[in-house]
Length: 287
Image 1 (cartoon, one colour):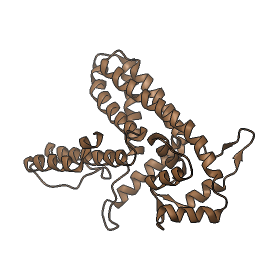
Image 2 (image 1 turned 135 degrees about the vertical axis):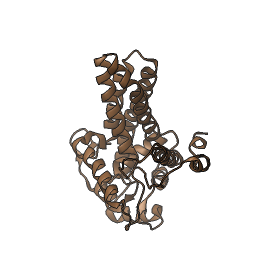
Image 3 (image 1 turned 120 degrees about the vertical axis):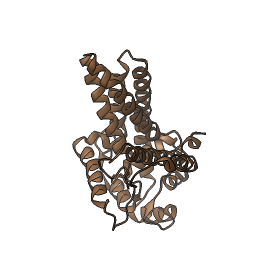
Image 4 (image 1 turned 90 degrees about the horizontal axis):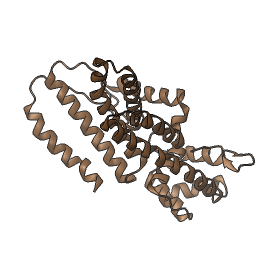
């Protein structure tokens, strides 16, 4: 039901109806290009391409893990950007400085969420946009480096709860609705993190040696270089661990430390070879 709102065919149909109405010079603009539009028509076309790419990303996330906290978090981030962009100017003009500052913080948080969850479209090596794509990837890595807690599911959940509560604390109905939604996403992420940490600890015990890990990785990856989310779910299911969509996504994010949606054998070896933490028996690889 969810995916029909974000289908490629719907996005393509909308694009085919709007594009012929646009006048002016054609441009190549997407999330990896930072350019100043020469006209309102070009800006509209650029915005349309951004919306289409966002819809495609949402569809891919929803197909791999329906209604996961990544899907909901991306929706929440976009909602925070839109709501605070609309409400911020009015709060500044009416001198409601406290609400204006909170709206600015929420707007920046929404941008961070979208940047982290929405990877740049892949560009051919010869593309002139390659440098910008690399800058976008560097920005993502910089956010994860300086805000390390955002690498973990519990970290994302905690920050969703914090900024969601800031936005929900304002009296505006839109703020309350958007903030409450983001807080719910945060609670879902935190709950998934706790369950996933225990599941991964027990799952690790089912792998007897690095040779056994390699054999099982090749089996479930079908001798490919990378393991998909669905293949990891099947592997854990066969080992006796049936995870929910949110727990599966949390486990995949915990193992895929390159954040490229491609879980490699080397990343699995790094996870499996890490020592456990002291008396608590928890893995050093926190999720």
